[in-house]
Image 1 (cartoon, rainbow, N blue to C red):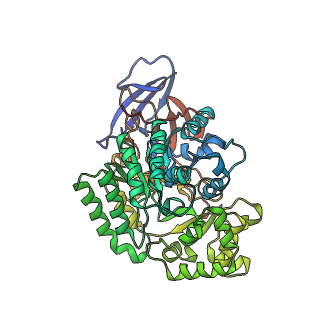
Image 2: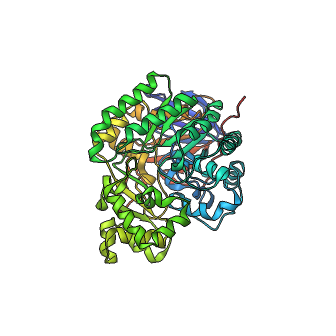
Image 3: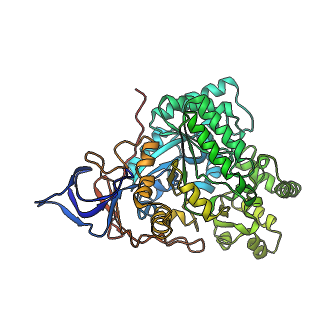
Amino acid sequence: MKILIKNGFLADGSGRPGYYADLLIDEDKIVKIGKIEDFTEGKIIDAKGLTVAPGFIDTHSHSDLQILTDPKVEPKVRQGITTEILGQDGISMAPLPVKYISPWRKNLAGLDGDSDSINWNYETTENYLKMIEDVKPGLNECYLVPHGNIRMEAMGLENRLPDESELEKMRQITRREMEAGAMGLSTGLIYMPCAYSESKEIIEMCKVVAEYDGSFVIHQRSEADAILDSMEEVIKIGRESGVKIHYSHFKVCGKKNWDKIGQVICLLEKAEAEGIRVSFDQYPYVAGSTMLGVILPPWVHDGGTNKVLERLADNQLRKKMIEDIEQGIAGWDNFVEFAGLDGIFITSVKNKKNEDAVGLNLSQLGKLRGKDPYQAAFDLLLEEENAVGMVDFYGTEEHVQLFMKRPEMNVCTDGLLGGKPHPRVFGAFPRVLGKYVREDQALGLEEAVYKMTKKPADTFNIAGRGYLTEGNYADICIFNPETVIDKGTFTDPVQYPEGIQYVIINGKIVIENGIHTGTRSGVVLRKNRKS
C-alpha cells in the first residue's frame, strides 16, 4: 500500500532545521521526499499544521512480558514510539534455564510482571525472540541480553564470584545471545544476582559484546551517595573492554548528593576525551519507578526471591533490616534515605487483597494497616512474594533539564506497565515535546526529535530507522506541535497523551487521528552478526 503524507513540516531526526515537504511511502519504505504531484493510488494524509518525524525509539522499556500477552503495547504506540529496546537492568526473560523458571519468575515479577498464559520453557534468546515474532508485535522490538540471566545460567543465584570455568561459560553464553541478535548487554547493579558481581566479570562479557560493536547498558551500582565511584567503575569497564557505554535513566538521587552533579558531568567528559564512547537515556520526570524490594538491604536478597521471603518472615531479621535502612550501608543506594517513606508510592501488586495499597506511600500504608510503615512494607512484600512496584521521588526539574540538554542524552520511558504505573509509561515522549519544547523551551523542536529518533538509532546501531530519508523504513510519528502533551499524573497515570495524530510502523497505519487501528506491524530487529 502506498501512503502520501502531504503538507507536513518534516523534523527529519537529524537535528537540522525542519522543512516543508511531502513524503511518499510504498510498502514498508520511504521512497520519496519532496514535492509530489499526481498521486492517484493509495492513501493521502494531509499533515498541514502537523510535524512529521521519525517514529520514536524507546531505549529503556519493560514490555518484555507484555509484548507476549498484549502485543499491541498501546501505551507505547499511542505516544509515538515505534521501536523499543527490551532486556533492561540485567533482569529479563531470556536466557532462562528450565530449572530456574520458578525462582526467576518471582525475581522478574516486580519489573515486568508475571503470567501463566505463556510457555516459559523457551530457554534461549533465540527462542524468546521467535515467540515475539509469532504473536505479531505491535511495534519493533530489540533485545539486550541481561547480565543476571547469563549469570544464573552459568552459576545459579548464589552470592559469590565466578571461578574461571564459570567466567568462561558467561563469555560463551554472551556470544550465543549476541549471535541470536541481541543489541548488547545490560546489567542492573542494584538488582540480584547482578549486584553480586565485580568489575572483572562484567569486563569479560563486555569484551565479547565489543566484538559485535554492541552496547553495554547499565543501571549503575549507585545513583546516589556513591555515584562518583560508580561512574568510575563503569568508565573502567568501557576502557578495559572497548565496549560502548550507555547509562540507563541517568540522574543523581537525593538532595544531599546534588552537589555532585558538576563532578558527574566532568566524569562524562573525561571518559569521552579518553575515547570511551558514552551515552545515556533519561525519562523527563522527577520521580523514578522500580521494584519495592530495592528498599531492602542487599544481604536480604542473597540466594534469590525465596530467600528474601524467608528473611521477611523472620522478625529478628526485620529488626536488622530496619536498622540497616535507617543507618545506611556504605555503597548501597538507600531509597528510603533519599526519597523518604512519604516519597515512595506503591504502584502494583498481584493479589486482589492488597489492591488497597496501590497509590499509597509507605507512611500511608502503615496507617492503613495500623502498624509501623516498615512492617507494613515488609508484610506487603512477603504476601506478594516480592512482586510489588513502586514510584520514588528523587530530584528537581532543574536537574532534569540540565541532563536533558547534554549531548549524550536520548529520551526513554523506563515504564513498568502493571498496576497504577509511573505516568512515563503513557507520556514520556509527548511530555518532552509539550512541556520541555513548547512550554519551557528547554530544547528546540528539531533537537528534541533528534534525541528521540536518530540519536538512539545511532547509539544502538539500529539501521534504517530514526531518520526520514529515502530508502529508510517507514516508521513515522505525525503530531501537532501546538497541542502535544502528556496527560497522566502520579495519582491518575493511565491516560493517553494528546496531539499524537498518526503513527506508522513499517508502512502500516497503527494510530489514525489519535485512535489505534488494531494493526500490529512491528518486527523483531536483530543486530547484525559479527562479520
